[in-house]
Length: 253
Image (cartoon, rainbow, N blue to C red):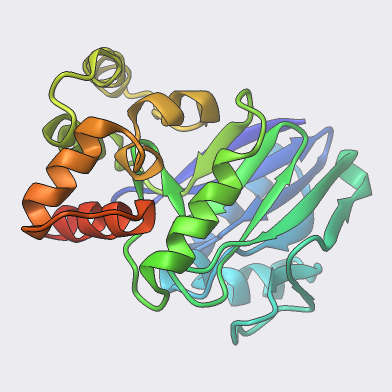
């Protein structure tokens, strides 16, 4: 199975999963690039997968369904027009035409009902986990997002992460501010700058690299704790409080 990025808007990726002449798409905020790719490649769409309700993730569903009436999998806890298969934690999404199977993960935090899809060595996590970052807390709490990120961090390290925004360089700039002595962050900045200079996406990326460079997964690291306490102005005992302080700092960065 191939996984192909379809750029949309200023920094979104719509992910197209392809096997032979069949395809599925994840978070189609814009119908145009999806319909164009399907037509250009002569592909038959078999499913749409959705992680959360924000317009840049669901805005293209109606137009796509007009041309390709297919099942739409999406979070049971969110009201999204067009969903035919509401899903939640540990549900299975079977795409037999692609020979693919995904397990649903509940990932509240960015939105209240956000979900992700894990399988075939890949994670489609919407706006929960980014390269060296995480989503803003629009509807959930710091504790919810902290738990959601912990759920993702527990997946196999070789999992390829397919988030939906090209935020890597700005996230790494913040990560370097949190951990200025972290050599892995410095190395990742260099490699990511080279990818972007060549016009290549920095996504997907291996999950194991996040454990070394993503401050939102490193709330137990002494340097991260120290920086969080500076931002909070007082001692922080719980990792979730460290996470919350770092997330609040990122909002202002």
